[in-house]
Amino acid sequence: MLTTTDTVTLTGPLAPAVLRRAAGPLTVTVDEAARARLDRGRRLFRALRDGDDGTGERPIYGATTGFGALVGYPGRADEADQCDNTLAHLGAGQGPDLPHGIVRAALLVRTRSLAQGLSGVSAEVVERLAAMFATTFSPAVPRYGSVGASGDLVPLAYAAQALRGRGHAYADGRRMPAAEALAATGLRPLALDGRDALALVNGTSVTTAALALAHDTVRTAHRALTALTCLLADLLGCDPGFLDADLLRAYGHPGAVDTGTRMRHRLAGTTPSGTRPLQEPYSIRCSPQLLGAAEDALRHIDAVIAADLAGVSDNPLFFPGVGDPVHPDPAEGRAVHGGNFFGQPAAFAADLLASVTAQLGNLAERQLDLLVDPARNGGLPPMLATEPGAQHGLQGVQLATTAFVAEIRRCATPAAMQSLPTNLHNQDIVPFGTQGALRAHDLAELLGLLCGSLALGLRQAVHVGARRPTAPRCAALLDALSAAIDPVDPDRPLDEDVRTAARLLATHAMP
Image 1: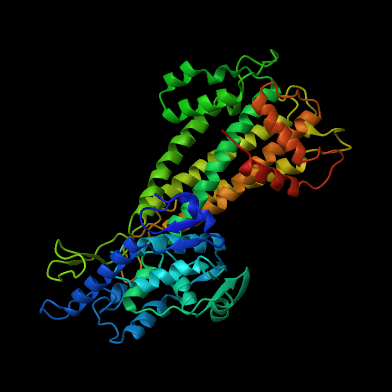
Image 2: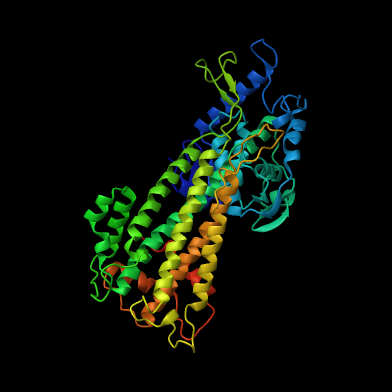
């Protein structure tokens, strides 16, 4: 499996962690094994298309035919024209450009898929794609236009056109005509035939990349929220009995058992105040069950992403026979037309991730609400203001967290079952995984801000009278927050403080 080293090879599945690194320059190499697979697949594609076994030219979707609902019509005879035929009609996207990190991660997923040698593309195409990652080149890809079936056709078509020097792209973060961006980064326009072009746009690479990046952000927030929940319990002097190991084993869910173990580790050494009620509010008492259920769900999403990153989502695929691997016999080889581009697994996973994000956001917002309420926070001043009335403490931040949670809930409506027929009913059912994954990416960023808001509240709570944490690991987290963020005294705009806290939580060790 690939690891997050300085060099990425294209043999074996991608590690999800490498996708975030693809936002910047990255060394991607095409090793000899990948080149051999590509050469074999290319020879087999040409042999099958040209009928080298004496049967005459065979129909190969997208190479000898039209596309989508027009598959029954012949394509263009000239290979360069067939490439134009593939890409031009897909230039129908709209909306703002996708973040560079998603676009480049998607192209890394696409490059790895093509490098498996089952798609019939030329080795030069994969080598040129790999070379792009060493630069700051990033295609300008509009957000809207994919239904997540037959691959992310429209967004990937924009990426392919930019690599050909058409449309627009970014170099060093500046948007410009794609031909200029290629020249500025030392790249040459990519030459494609019809098969290369179709292989670039088939596949759920945008969906997979956005889902993987969103999942990584939510995983980080989940770890942070687990630590913040422990810090909240320590500051308030809660009895940690709600984390009892026997209690959680009896619950029977592995995520809750594992989450409870991590929370007990972080709260080791805590001393209850003895002044709290027998049973804490659910936002504390039921936190291992909630966070544990999120852990179980995130593990399922882990598996979906791993399968996507190890798979080949293309159509058609070219499988050699058992004969000579260097010179495949077209009589033994097969061109198989199917639907590996149908992103239903990622669509379901994106919807699940949005649901997890919403409930984690609910937990963070409820915990902050508890912390600013003098009826439940152990007698701390309302809104954690040092002089209530003359100052307002976390009042504005709490209002904003309410807005964040409302936005997450509004956008968390499942996408994976919102199918609409299109393409003359050729695509008569679609998964809308792209929408789900991009939506999950947006919501994950809001969850990070919710965690930052809660962290700011916990830092302020100690300033206005909460006890210092008695568990050493909780104290270390508080000290990190206190070193990065000044107390709110007097009032000041807190937007940057929330972002600072969110960044700290994303980088602070959260065992």
